Length: 299
Image (tube, rainbow, N blue to C red):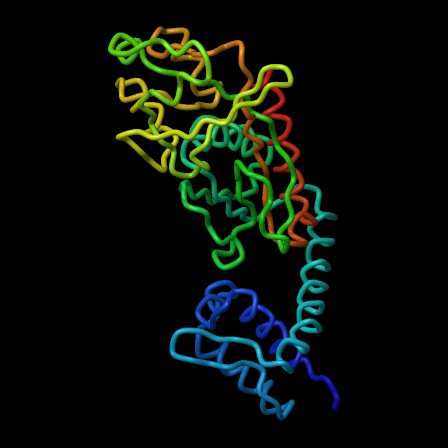
């Protein structure tokens, strides 16, 4: 069977349908209507005389033939993207849009200031930033980059470490007036905590070779890091807080650092992106800039 230009287009569309998990997602990603996307997949199936997708009202899944065919379509789509990226790299000044998702607090504290610097340096790059504490599916949402405070869990994505952020235990002076000051990690189990719902619920402390894990519980919980700090300031309990967030409040006296002779687990901040995306000049420049920015503020 001779391969036509139209079939090449259909193969790329099919690859996007699989990666986005739906016809609507592929349509949004490619800037096409759902009807056009459906047309390309149906045309492929007719040309190949084989069903590529099992369809239901709510989901799609690959047939055995579809799974095999997708691997070839994926290579074609990636090669086309690489060709475009190579042309972009030749250009003197990087341009285009970067879609980024980031947790709210680290976004406001660090990423937004870093992006302000970046856009002054590269004014033709457009930034589309979504601040949310939810874990965004960057493939389905068409994101170029996600900032995450955890090691990479999805092996289909790629990651670059941006920073290591130290943390500390804090409480407010008002809270400490109502209870006994914790003098050892064991004492922490008797205290109220402001629980951060995106963490494991266990605080790990170490001193030399000694390591202790404390399960935390409290009357207040939140999925937002800024809200966590505000609840601690208001006297609702203890929390583990990034040092960059806590330090200004410790200096003003609204927070008190606890058990300073113990070490807590650092937060590792990663730039996470779809495979192949880092080949784009604008994203490579942004990741490098973020690494440099975090290095500067760490000192």
